[in-house]
Image (cartoon, rainbow, N blue to C red; front, side):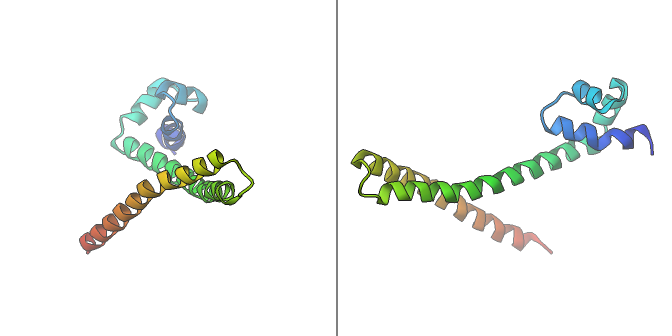
Length: 121
């Protein structure tokens, strides 16, 4: 295994997390020269992008799970007649304010999926 192969993913991961090539090299224990040669490889930007996409997808999954719980909390506040009317109204507004953008996003996702399926051989 060459130095480039040895450090490629490690440097790409650190860069995908926002570190500079210099700092990524320091953490990986390789020279800056090796790091910059790696970062000039055409595959490097692609790998960094893949890693960022993967991290973003994982975060979206966690947020989606938490969003369901958050809606339940808002709903319980809204439904509880013992809460102050202003708190119940604020909860209702929060739910309604989230509904439209999420509905639109879902529709756009479905449309994009249909378009992508049409393009597949």
